[in-house]
Image (cartoon, rainbow, N blue to C red; front, side, top):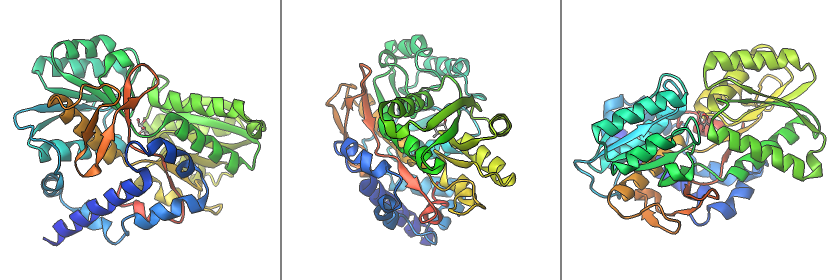
Length: 394
Ligand code: RAM
């Protein structure tokens, strides 16, 4: 019972944070720029909404099945989808970011009476995802939500799925407009790029060499954030002193990311900053830099639970601050939009609206690529002042 109360408190606190940090769907774009700024005071209001560290651990410590059942109970506000099957296809297995996403997706679908099928390819490749999606088509699922390992290469397979009457959306990392009905985007691409390049500028002291440690070379989301960083850098003279020396790829594998971080340090003795726009890459680089007592500073996109020990303002810590969103909330949005597609409440057209349970109403907006998207909210900054509040949440 106590755990249930804590669970409800936590859910309410996270919802409050989401509302405080993200606003409704319509407000997301306007609010994104200020919230993405790396100034400490920007993070303060949202940090106050964050669950206190004392509240969070009980939820995290709950046995998986029990926590799942309670979470399902709490997931109200969708529509009944009894007898329907919803698949989630992540980039690859073993990534804690996608573990949280699967939890959020499952909570919503099972909370509304549906069945979940989880597909976790052993490596972050498009071929592995094609194999998984083919099996979902044969199985006759009602819906597929995919975090894509390639923007275009899933098109034939996803078109086959849609031709078979399966509703297809993507989340986290998109497929092209012809391959999807809509896209649940964690944050505006420009907002993420702006937050990252501003962090690089700040941590470099305004000039010098930086490197990017990315995921796979084909990942739609990382590639679009990197392109946004580059174009912002080119468009404003305040970034003129920054030199991007290399984009390295750790393929969202811990060992390869570690090797790539070490290689960057050896190749570029004057390197000032590494920016890793991947939770796997940033965690690997954080350990390398901290173990080596390197003066190179780190920023990027990281999970608070994995990065807490590396976040700090002093020389003993490798990462002064970083950004992310709630991966569980992102996948909940994918689940709610899948339910709306399956129930015929939306078709994926720009302007469609649906209610994402207790997350509120969302509107499908123009994704800028010929398809629609649904934006969760602006990226959130994690820093020494708020990391303790978040490290046990996700
Ligand atoms: C990794 C994955 C994921 C990305 C995060 C930031 O976990 O590449 O797609 O959104 O990092």
